[in-house]
Image (cartoon, rainbow, N blue to C red):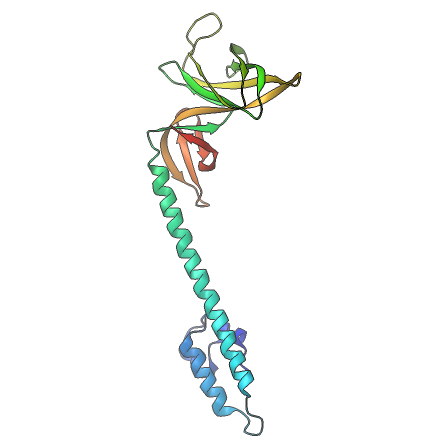
Length: 221
Protein backbone atom coordinates (compact mmCIF):
# COMPACT_ATOMS: atom_id res chain seq x y z
CA UNK A 1 0.00 0.00 0.00
CA UNK A 2 1.03 3.62 -0.44
CA UNK A 3 2.44 5.34 2.64
CA UNK A 4 1.16 8.91 2.31
CA UNK A 5 3.43 10.11 5.11
CA UNK A 6 6.46 9.04 3.09
CA UNK A 7 5.46 11.46 0.32
CA UNK A 8 5.48 14.59 2.43
CA UNK A 9 9.22 15.03 2.60
CA UNK A 10 10.81 12.96 -0.18
CA UNK A 11 8.71 13.58 -3.28
CA UNK A 12 7.66 10.68 -5.52
CA UNK A 13 10.50 8.39 -6.53
CA UNK A 14 14.19 9.24 -6.81
CA UNK A 15 13.96 11.05 -10.16
CA UNK A 16 11.07 13.21 -9.06
CA UNK A 17 12.84 14.27 -5.87
CA UNK A 18 15.92 15.32 -7.84
CA UNK A 19 14.04 17.51 -10.29
CA UNK A 20 11.39 18.87 -7.95
CA UNK A 21 11.73 20.41 -4.46
CA UNK A 22 10.19 18.57 -1.53
CA UNK A 23 6.58 19.43 -0.87
CA UNK A 24 4.61 19.29 2.33
CA UNK A 25 1.45 18.31 0.41
CA UNK A 26 0.56 15.55 -2.04
CA UNK A 27 -1.30 16.73 -5.13
CA UNK A 28 -3.91 14.69 -6.93
CA UNK A 29 -1.53 14.36 -9.91
CA UNK A 30 1.24 13.01 -7.66
CA UNK A 31 -1.15 10.52 -6.11
CA UNK A 32 -2.37 9.22 -9.47
CA UNK A 33 1.21 8.81 -10.72
CA UNK A 34 2.09 6.86 -7.60
CA UNK A 35 -0.94 4.62 -8.01
CA UNK A 36 -0.07 3.88 -11.64
CA UNK A 37 3.55 3.11 -10.69
CA UNK A 38 2.40 0.78 -7.94
CA UNK A 39 0.00 -1.06 -10.26
CA UNK A 40 2.72 -1.48 -12.87
CA UNK A 41 5.24 -2.83 -10.35
CA UNK A 42 3.03 -4.96 -8.17
CA UNK A 43 3.70 -8.66 -7.73
CA UNK A 44 1.49 -10.48 -10.29
CA UNK A 45 1.32 -13.42 -7.90
CA UNK A 46 0.04 -11.14 -5.12
CA UNK A 47 -1.87 -8.29 -6.78
CA UNK A 48 -3.41 -5.47 -4.79
CA UNK A 49 -6.98 -6.25 -3.80
CA UNK A 50 -9.90 -3.95 -4.50
CA UNK A 51 -10.17 -3.32 -0.78
CA UNK A 52 -6.58 -2.08 -0.53
CA UNK A 53 -7.04 0.13 -3.58
CA UNK A 54 -10.20 1.73 -2.18
CA UNK A 55 -8.54 2.20 1.23
CA UNK A 56 -5.69 4.19 -0.35
CA UNK A 57 -8.14 6.37 -2.27
CA UNK A 58 -10.06 7.01 0.96
CA UNK A 59 -6.83 7.96 2.77
CA UNK A 60 -5.90 10.46 0.11
CA UNK A 61 -9.43 11.91 -0.02
CA UNK A 62 -9.42 12.38 3.76
CA UNK A 63 -6.00 14.07 3.74
CA UNK A 64 -7.01 16.32 0.85
CA UNK A 65 -10.28 17.19 2.58
CA UNK A 66 -8.48 18.20 5.79
CA UNK A 67 -6.13 20.48 3.84
CA UNK A 68 -9.09 22.14 2.11
CA UNK A 69 -10.91 22.53 5.42
CA UNK A 70 -7.86 24.15 7.05
CA UNK A 71 -7.46 26.49 4.10
CA UNK A 72 -11.13 27.47 4.21
CA UNK A 73 -10.97 28.06 7.96
CA UNK A 74 -7.86 30.27 7.64
CA UNK A 75 -9.58 32.32 4.94
CA UNK A 76 -12.70 32.64 7.11
CA UNK A 77 -10.58 33.73 10.10
CA UNK A 78 -8.77 36.35 8.00
CA UNK A 79 -12.06 37.74 6.69
CA UNK A 80 -13.53 37.87 10.19
CA UNK A 81 -10.45 39.70 11.51
CA UNK A 82 -10.66 42.27 8.71
CA UNK A 83 -14.38 42.77 9.31
CA UNK A 84 -13.80 43.18 13.06
CA UNK A 85 -11.05 45.75 12.40
CA UNK A 86 -13.42 47.78 10.19
CA UNK A 87 -16.11 47.70 12.86
CA UNK A 88 -13.63 48.79 15.54
CA UNK A 89 -12.37 51.64 13.31
CA UNK A 90 -15.94 52.98 13.14
CA UNK A 91 -15.74 53.58 16.92
CA UNK A 92 -13.10 56.30 16.57
CA UNK A 93 -14.52 59.57 17.90
CA UNK A 94 -17.36 57.85 19.77
CA UNK A 95 -17.75 57.21 23.47
CA UNK A 96 -17.62 53.67 24.83
CA UNK A 97 -18.13 52.28 28.31
CA UNK A 98 -15.42 49.93 29.62
CA UNK A 99 -14.83 48.05 32.84
CA UNK A 100 -12.28 50.08 34.79
CA UNK A 101 -11.70 51.58 38.24
CA UNK A 102 -10.02 54.62 36.68
CA UNK A 103 -11.83 57.36 34.83
CA UNK A 104 -10.60 60.39 32.94
CA UNK A 105 -11.76 63.87 33.88
CA UNK A 106 -11.68 65.91 30.64
CA UNK A 107 -11.07 69.63 30.34
CA UNK A 108 -14.81 70.37 30.38
CA UNK A 109 -14.82 69.07 33.97
CA UNK A 110 -17.27 66.14 33.95
CA UNK A 111 -16.72 62.40 34.20
CA UNK A 112 -19.38 59.88 33.19
CA UNK A 113 -19.34 56.45 34.83
CA UNK A 114 -21.57 53.73 36.23
CA UNK A 115 -21.64 51.06 38.91
CA UNK A 116 -22.72 47.50 38.11
CA UNK A 117 -24.91 45.97 40.83
CA UNK A 118 -25.61 42.20 40.70
CA UNK A 119 -28.51 42.74 43.12
CA UNK A 120 -30.52 45.58 44.61
CA UNK A 121 -28.45 47.49 47.16
CA UNK A 122 -28.80 50.28 49.67
CA UNK A 123 -26.53 53.20 50.51
CA UNK A 124 -24.43 53.04 47.33
CA UNK A 125 -21.46 55.42 47.46
CA UNK A 126 -18.61 56.21 45.07
CA UNK A 127 -15.32 57.65 46.34
CA UNK A 128 -13.21 59.66 43.88
CA UNK A 129 -9.48 59.52 44.63
CA UNK A 130 -6.54 61.38 43.08
CA UNK A 131 -3.19 59.87 41.98
CA UNK A 132 -1.88 60.06 45.54
CA UNK A 133 -4.87 58.10 46.84
CA UNK A 134 -6.35 61.10 48.61
CA UNK A 135 -10.14 61.40 48.77
CA UNK A 136 -11.35 64.13 46.43
CA UNK A 137 -15.11 63.66 46.55
CA UNK A 138 -17.65 61.21 47.89
CA UNK A 139 -20.78 60.75 45.82
CA UNK A 140 -23.88 59.42 47.59
CA UNK A 141 -26.17 57.43 45.26
CA UNK A 142 -28.42 55.89 47.93
CA UNK A 143 -30.59 52.85 47.31
CA UNK A 144 -30.36 51.39 43.80
CA UNK A 145 -31.90 48.42 41.93
CA UNK A 146 -29.88 45.65 40.31
CA UNK A 147 -28.13 46.52 37.06
CA UNK A 148 -26.07 49.52 35.95
CA UNK A 149 -26.41 52.74 37.95
CA UNK A 150 -25.10 55.70 35.94
CA UNK A 151 -23.67 58.79 37.60
CA UNK A 152 -21.66 61.91 36.71
CA UNK A 153 -18.89 63.66 38.61
CA UNK A 154 -18.83 67.39 37.94
CA UNK A 155 -15.08 67.60 38.51
CA UNK A 156 -15.31 69.46 41.82
CA UNK A 157 -13.87 68.39 45.13
CA UNK A 158 -15.70 68.33 48.46
CA UNK A 159 -15.12 72.10 48.85
CA UNK A 160 -16.60 72.87 45.45
CA UNK A 161 -13.28 73.66 43.80
CA UNK A 162 -12.66 72.39 40.25
CA UNK A 163 -10.05 69.66 39.90
CA UNK A 164 -7.52 69.53 37.04
CA UNK A 165 -8.06 67.15 34.10
CA UNK A 166 -6.55 63.71 34.48
CA UNK A 167 -7.07 60.19 35.74
CA UNK A 168 -8.99 59.60 38.95
CA UNK A 169 -9.67 56.34 40.75
CA UNK A 170 -13.21 55.26 41.56
CA UNK A 171 -14.14 53.10 44.55
CA UNK A 172 -17.78 52.01 44.73
CA UNK A 173 -19.20 50.44 47.85
CA UNK A 174 -22.63 49.44 49.11
CA UNK A 175 -24.39 47.27 51.65
CA UNK A 176 -25.92 43.91 50.73
CA UNK A 177 -27.59 41.94 53.53
CA UNK A 178 -25.91 44.23 56.05
CA UNK A 179 -22.41 43.62 54.67
CA UNK A 180 -20.18 46.25 53.03
CA UNK A 181 -19.33 45.10 49.50
CA UNK A 182 -17.11 46.67 46.84
CA UNK A 183 -18.77 47.05 43.45
CA UNK A 184 -17.42 47.03 39.90
CA UNK A 185 -17.20 50.40 38.15
CA UNK A 186 -17.39 51.22 34.46
CA UNK A 187 -16.25 54.47 32.87
CA UNK A 188 -17.10 56.27 29.64
CA UNK A 189 -14.26 57.47 27.40
CA UNK A 190 -13.77 58.66 23.83
CA UNK A 191 -12.04 56.31 21.36
CA UNK A 192 -9.04 58.07 19.81
CA UNK A 193 -7.66 55.23 17.66
CA UNK A 194 -7.66 51.49 17.04
CA UNK A 195 -4.48 49.41 17.25
CA UNK A 196 -3.88 45.92 15.86
CA UNK A 197 -1.60 44.04 18.26
CA UNK A 198 1.19 41.60 17.37
CA UNK A 199 -1.12 38.69 18.20
CA UNK A 200 -3.75 40.16 15.84
CA UNK A 201 -5.87 41.29 18.80
CA UNK A 202 -7.63 44.65 18.59
CA UNK A 203 -7.15 47.39 21.17
CA UNK A 204 -8.84 50.76 21.57
CA UNK A 205 -6.87 53.82 22.63
CA UNK A 206 -9.18 55.77 24.93
CA UNK A 207 -8.72 59.43 25.75
CA UNK A 208 -6.87 59.72 29.06
CA UNK A 209 -7.35 56.03 29.89
CA UNK A 210 -5.00 54.40 27.37
CA UNK A 211 -5.24 51.08 25.57
CA UNK A 212 -7.94 48.55 26.44
CA UNK A 213 -8.99 45.34 24.73
CA UNK A 214 -12.04 45.42 22.50
CA UNK A 215 -13.60 42.77 24.72
CA UNK A 216 -13.56 45.24 27.66
CA UNK A 217 -16.23 47.37 25.95
CA UNK A 218 -19.66 46.89 27.53
CA UNK A 219 -21.55 49.69 25.78
CA UNK A 220 -21.20 52.08 22.84
CA UNK A 221 -22.84 55.50 23.17
